[in-house]
Image 1: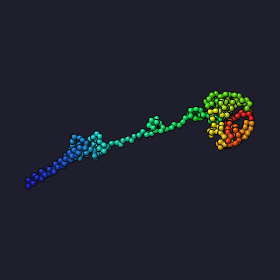
Image 2: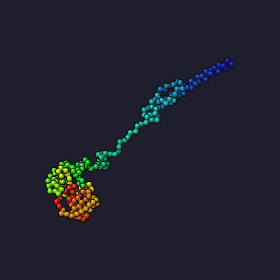
Image 3: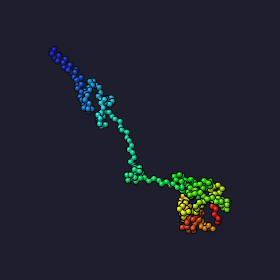
Image 4: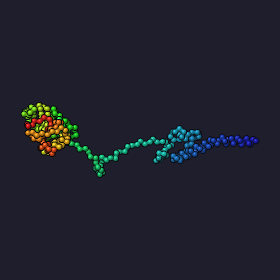
Length: 263
């Protein structure tokens, strides 16, 4: 009987130490596995078996760092997603395209010389890339003459015209183009044409245009013949002399505003 009690005591002692031993063995096994994964040769054991391993319960990062050269899936902690970067444009510049055989982009053509446009209510002059300046009837004759000098290639010749039917006027002209001035106001223009120069309206009418073209582009066109020869008139104020009265007749003189013709 006493022997059986001793056996029970010893058996109870074995049972008492079984749980701590299992915890130690479990901890050693986990430590060995972690060491194999991380390449560490140090085997550290946490004796309290209840302690969470590598922050599994708390979500914190493990104390061991990932080995150099490991992939993102091998790291012990979740790394932030890389910020995407925009790649540079693959379109070659004109210079680069020329050197590599590509086709450079054509640039818009810039008009560098002054351009004079005939208007029914004045004149428009554009220089280079600047917007056109409109000189309407009634504008300062000095400003108009200065602008025309850049287009016509020099200063205009100023001549008094005291015998105009509407009263004394002044004519300023150069190379077949003239303006009529009343006092200091620009009141009309006349183009008789010149070699290597072709002035037109915005719709393309000018010296050499046909009567058919005039009728197609303008409304209110009438034709008459007087001491100056065949002449067309329009309700918009544009007029001119013609070589005849048929559709194929061409403009030889074009004008707008006041004139000083002797009929």
